[in-house]
Image (cartoon, rainbow, N blue to C red; front, side, top):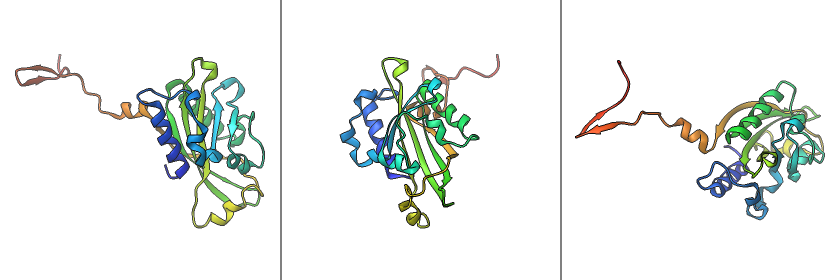
Length: 196
């Protein structure tokens, strides 16, 4: 993760979840992440409604020069990126797997921007209440510093999804080598497999 807001939210999410796949949405305390609230958003993981925003921080809304609450998350993306973004949100909802991704776009003045997207699952007692918490923030680079100040005056065009990787405890477990359980006999280890 390149953006400080992404790292802070991920650390907070990890702390809240403990040994569970994801923390409960009711456990998230805005005061605990007040320094990054403006870059943070919450989505309803409702496929039929195209994943609407439940909340969106001021900087996230300023990127598009409008209030995003109630709007579909998918409408922010170019047509070519929408299926991949919908798939990422589906994986997040079904498998409790988060994602960090690079995003590119440009504003109405033609200035290019690179952003970072973080999506993390929040569990709920009923599937209809499932949510995702995330960050969408411009990456600070020397060339983009002045242009970032202009965000809001010139809203961003649709986003393009770039490189991405899955994160979270479910992924960490899957990346461990899968060895069959050994059977021990007086210092000799026998592994199942090989010829029959």
